Length: 71
Image (tube, rainbow, N blue to C red):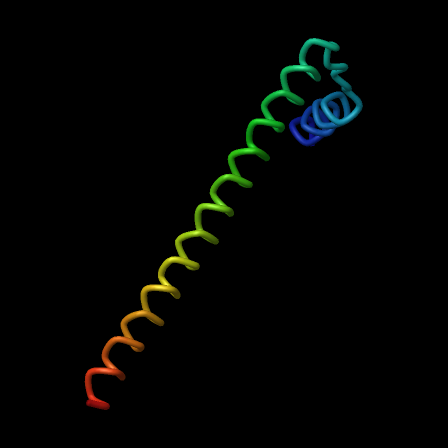
């Protein structure tokens, strides 16, 4: 019983505790998130361009081979 009471007291103290971050911490977090967003955009456009060139290559291949068999 005493152990459970101690655990409840510790739990209540930890739940009521609030940590206020400094303005510098928010600035660093904002900078880190901005870099992560730009990296995701770059990867997205890289994938788009790769798919585009893959599609062009496939179309070119089909065009070349379809003309070869028509002659």
